[in-house]
Image 1 (tube, rainbow, N blue to C red):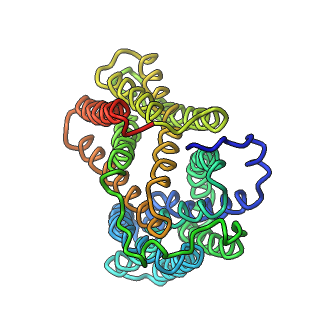
Image 2 (image 1 turned 90 degrees about the horizontal axis):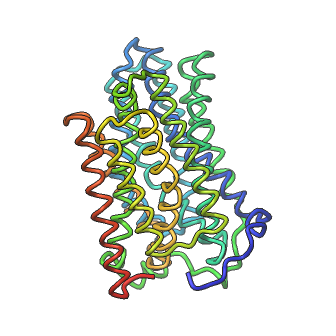
Length: 391
């Protein structure tokens, strides 16, 4: 970014940003609740948690397949209006799902009913990020994204606690809460104050003019998002395996995930305070990814395991911020929702492939493959910086 960043206090006093953030967290909450909420729902209504796991798989596939088409549609109709429709539709779909489960619908019906809210939720990611660009100015954007990443970690923790609390009341309550959260997202974003029209490109201008997505220029930033998903899968999918290698159990796995989230919040806060979204910082963060993943390959003791998770967690939020900000610089205003949706698909696909590696290969292979990815993408950034293709 070439503009001078305003002080952090300017963001903290920005009511429009916090209005957007409240709506965004409400929109993300159902996705964070979904894994545990679906298994809780099916356990209460059919006696099988396996159906809930299959529902979650269908939900993720629907999200992935729907993200880019929904993003393209948002660019045409305008992110402000489109996100409200998507969130409202997701709320209706989740309410129907909960109602069908309460009425004793067969498993096939539940699997079919999870598809519409999944498709709609897939489009929310790109739409919310595109809408942020209409809420804060370019100089404030890096800090806004960094703070938002901290809020995402908070939402993930709150989602698990919320499902656990509601499940004690009724097995269908968590899915109903997902519907309520989506409805709140729609209501908040419908009333979102945005910057003056003169400061914002008109929705759909780039798309209408046929301006193509700069995929070649954006490729290494999409690659950075792929590295994020791949490395995180190596940690988040197999914490119990790593803990068992050093003589710990489920408690040790919980500690690893807690450290990962806590260091991500701290790293995000530090980046929001002093960070700069440059190619050099991206390469440095990917080097930390590589070092942390490499420490996971062999059991060198509990201290080394904590160091590995800390190295990965501390740069996760900052690297997401850098990739997001640099993508916005490249994406045409009328193609941003679609462009950010592609990033969502890329990161989700990487997480899925990394999860598959954890499930099919020896435990040491997953972090080793993640190390290779981080080194390759980091090297790409370094080469781009030396050739003048980055800053």
